[in-house]
Image (cartoon, rainbow over all chains, first blue to last red; front, side, top):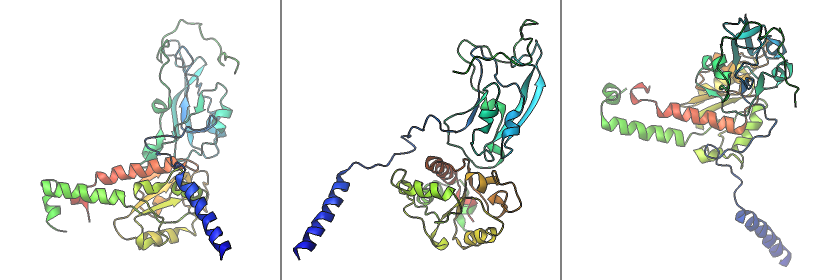
Length: 169
Length: 160
């Protein structure tokens, strides 16, 4: 008899203890839980500090992609119309967000560290066509002291087919 | 069906009624408890304490399609599963909505092969596609918010 009563009191004590704790719920659309640093979300095409595009249109990301979500079409750079420091640039760059599985193989394959999976995960669409992100949507804004692309440069400034890269930190 | 469709967007009365009904539809939308693959784990997490979809009126996942308003296709649909998905959709009562959660349900994702339906929109009409493999619970809630926006813009004259 007394044992049962103690059991009930013990049980209710646990209930009371949990009931007084603050709720764990994250009020999502208003409050967002920070993602991990290594989280792989929506892609971004990066630029150098001077505003030049990092992507050289080699399509290694498209080759590495296990779900064939990336489409790259490269064109030749010229000194009048220069997008990237290399020989070529990506004239078309499309990622189908509904195909992409956010594995990060494109990031690993990229020789110029142009494509980076960032922390945006809010990707919902009304139709499948709008899930295809074009280069304009993926390319980051021009840095503060940089110039937009395409730009005209002095002939002979960029003579390497593979651009000089900073050593990765 | 009635006078409300003939009136269209003209009257104040039908406009308010529209708001009221859409409010009711968005705030008491019970999803079908129906998971197919790994996305279902995230869907369960979205119902759990940390994300708590019941904040948006999704109190419980109804196991019976006749009591559900929203079908969240969570996972890849194999060709063998496709008739079952369609049957569950047919059993749901109107109005009903479909969210294709994740890459596989949306367009086959990484499984580009003969066994997997290349997008669940081949068998049921999809309202919102959510990208991710699998999407985070937040991403699913974002998809549901997108669906709510779509429902809020629905008009009386378009109702069947």
